Image (cartoon, rainbow, N blue to C red):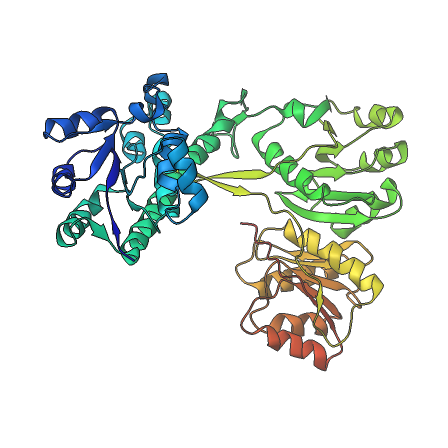
Length: 501
């Protein structure tokens, strides 16, 4: 369906290449509406041009921020030519049809590339331009839209060859390009503000630390620790303390039942759930009493006297809990350098930052533990196994990849983490369990990523493990699943991977 262009709205930042279009519009007796500098440019070519202000009855205001945002402009672009009500309303309010819209956008990306002045950058966020482009593209059944100067030549060719007429296919093609322009523009703006948000933490309160990971490295913390916890005892938190405290807090918030965990170098080396805080501590420590030395301890229950007395027997760096009984504090504060932190229960973060190369990575926190619970093995897991599998899956999520967690009776009895192969992680987990005399008969195994082959399942089964949880997603999932079916083992597929690098 061909349409004759009888009127055009032109408002562009870059004028180069516009002369030939204006010439064609003049030859085809097209009425031209324009704004500001574009109007001046067209009139200097000797072509009559109607100011948009004559339609809106408003001058360009607010320093040019508002020129075209008016029903007389957008009505002319969006009005349907085959809709009687639209036509009647346009006639009632003296709204002219706009058959052609030529708009380019303020040079946002170029401005970002050439200045760090945020005020200048923000002023190059176009509002009216994208709105007019989208309106015209939406109404491409009746309107031609050109949203980039690289398409000026194509428009000139069409105007010349078809004497000011366009086909529906041509208008649709221009509309697709216009939407692409708006998408790219919005993405550029979003990228800029995401970059600003990445920098935002560094605008927070600054605290110089004694040193970084090693004594020869300078270090600084940006943030407000008082929002997260109250320090009840001990020396100032070090760089390494803060890294481990973060890992501890991220882990403990996963649990609602009474849980105690021990963190060493950001990996959990002992964790257990029991009816009481004291019992949870005893079981967590038993999981790996060797690694617990000098660790960071975290609990989601109140530290009582009995627990404090037990904890006081070992050397640890930090203890984190939501509450401390007075008699427990008296015991724990006996060593002046021991760090005690009372955690705010509502603490939580939604974003994580990591420095790489000469920049910063930003990602959403790893929320959730599985998207499905699909029993794929030779039998359905028992209630006890389900509990252990879910517990193991959470622990595995907080271990460095490649990671394997072995759990029995809601107690971590072996783990392998930070290994370059999943088999090595599994072997390490089994050896850890044997080191502290844990039986693997009936234990549950969690893997942070899929099993690419059935070798891990075979090794674990030969060690006595008979239930597994993993995300799935390997092209050879069926190998592990088939082994479980042949050997009457339970296997749960979660659909959610938990890499932690």
